[in-house]
Image 1: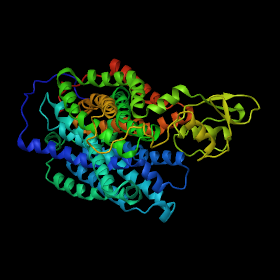
Image 2: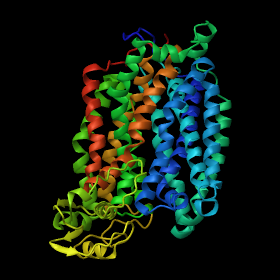
Image 3: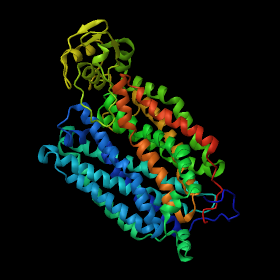
Image 4: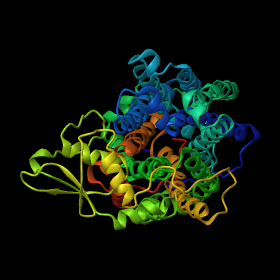
Amino acid sequence: MSTMTATSTKQTGMTKDERFVILASSLGTVFEWYDFYLYGSLASIIGVQFFSDYPPATRDIFALLAFAAGFLVRPFGAIVFGRVGDIVGRKYTFLVTILIMGLSTFIVGLLPNAATIGIAAPIILIALRLLQGLALGGEYGGAATYVAEHAPMGKRGYYTSFIQTTATLGLFLSLLVILFTRTALGEPEFAKWGWRIPFLLSVFLLGISVWIRLRLNESPVFQKMKDEGKASKAPLTEAFANWSNAKIVILALVGGVMGQGVVWYTGQFYALFFLQSILKVDGYTANLLIAWSLLLGTAFFIVFGALSDKIGRKPIILSGCLIAALTFFPIFRMITTNANPALEKAIESTKVEVVADPKACGDLFNPVGTRVFTAPCDTARAYLAQQSVKYSTTYTAGSPVKVVVNGKDVAYTDAKTSNPQVLAAVQAAGYPKAGDAGIVKMSNPFDIFRPQVAAIIGLLFILVIYVTMVYGPIAAMLVELFPTRIRYTSMSLPYHIGNGWFGGLLPATAFAIVASTGDIYAGLWYPIIFASITAVVGFFFLPETKDVDITK
């Protein structure tokens, strides 16, 4: 690990060439995140196109898990490309990752759906997602390391914060392209074939990114080390087989990146999923709401990155984790109040029970989407969760399965995807359906001054502020934790486990928790628990790194 002492290195400004290096590196990463986020933004449509053989609830989880598949392989990409980056160099690794990412995304835009080529469609889709995840696993560590190794002493938090904006800017760019295409084609045509256009456009972004990266020079810190013959010949062994370094990898994960990952994905991806799948807000409006919150909040990545150069990385990251854990529940409840007030009222005033023999009921926790529910007790509860109905389960020995709405029995036919009697009963009791007048709806991107819309954007903006707090300083901290010879490898693995596994699995796992409990807010326990663990572990064990000399 780098020596945790301040250095007397003179602070100097960046040259014109160095500023171009940072700008070019950040811009290329924006395009790469754009590619990766397209799938997340279009997960519901992807589910219909490629998982059409499954019922809607399972289809949604399959679509989210195909998205998560890319995150699962990110740590392996970090190991593979981290090793290449520490041996060969940062610049050449950049070129390989952007080519894999861009071509995989372009092919998704051309891929026939399940109705055309059957089971081959989802198999190929998942293979492409895995390639995207591998590429992204090698991208972030290289970008963060590359920028930090160009930055002057005392300004690493500020300069690397530009890399931190790339993920949000990439998501924002993908949302803009999606919204423009949706508006131009109309929702029916977009759902039918127009969703392919954002994927196909990535080939132009790929061309720009490759051109930019071909103009980059190698990192001066890495080049100096390589010229002196001090580069690592076995970075994986040095990084993970050496306990003095491996324990820092573990600490960086548990005391920093794990909490950062779940706060980030809750504030951006799960918020979008919550609006669409649980609150029944239409896709156009939900994407606009998220886009506005990102537009308003993105500059705070740089604010908190620069602030971390003055007060340290730990106070900002850990405060963001703790505040988020304490306020997620009230913020998401207020989002419900404003986005779908009828649903909130129905949850408070309508009592829905599933009465069944306890022996006939299983658990509904199904984050991987592979379980098939056949027992009437399970299919009834799964159906209610799909309709965003809050329910409780009453166990009565020997009782047949029945649904009780405000004390009245409702005929339940064992249907996995449709139950008109139950649906009519909960709607008569006050539960809204998609498209009802009370659900927030935006007619254009500038329809932001209505109190209902402004309130939701304000709440989403708060979630984005949490994201900027935990994510703005994290790149500088990770770079500073590890020595130059194994920096790319060492920092990439905890980052991609924290974000790829703990963060990437959050939407599917949180939705599975909602389905298994009958509480639309229960999924928030997932990020709250992990963010709290990071706040405690990081406070007691994570070293402050802002004054570390990273040239060693």
